[in-house]
Length: 384
Image: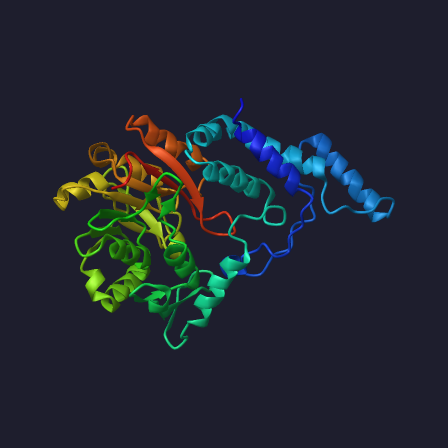
């Protein structure tokens, strides 16, 4: 196979295993570093015994302790990818630009080896300069606790960053969604983005920052339907709409979880922006909530078309896409779909879109220095 994901992946892995990065950890997202376990890694028995043998020799200073065991790392990374290589090769072959192909191999290498071995493209001085600039603009007089990982959300005026917004948002949201434009993809062939006048479906509205961004891009003649159902998220979302009444007039909150069909009852357990919907409750505090599909939203709201669908809904993206099949077949909207929640989403989502036979083309982009925020972009004809 001349254009092989496995070949690209193994080249990256082999080059990465000697690395030992100490500046490749996002403490803003994950908090302090927790030291790794000293237990033997989960390897096949023969390599695990060799691992113990080397530890004994090192303990008695018979051999020096190297930073990594290259052969073990490469073998483990190969074993990790091999069961899913054929499915991932499907995505690799369907990505239309070389940036996307290299990025896919790099993301997989990061997932296999971790932050001490692999750096993703955004870990550069310009990225950290953006964070520093945003953090300097924080006014801590107006802040809310999010009850999630001790996170706080600040009210920021964003005119200096090119947006006429005044909203509660985390600095990482400003960087990823507004400055890096997480739901916009530019390649040599086209730009996939929300355009003036577009009708947009926003899956995973959370605090309303993405809805405001999408509505700003859609302009006065555009419209955004933003799905959000968690009460603590909605309280901030609604406050952000109050702060921006002109743009808010283009946004309608849809207080249901996206799903493959409407009228099903699922359960939610609050986890801030990481809240998921579940088929059965996992705690006494779970809340029962009714689903709504995109196709039914279009009918209920008597929407004439949909031009752009964005989804970041914590692993429910494939189900929600199935609930938009009629709309996708009819209108062929541009798509920006998160695929980082589950490894299988990297192939199941593009395979399902491709199975519709509409001629969708794919690109991949990534918007953090860790494994979150990988977005699959898809379009049919050149965006208007």
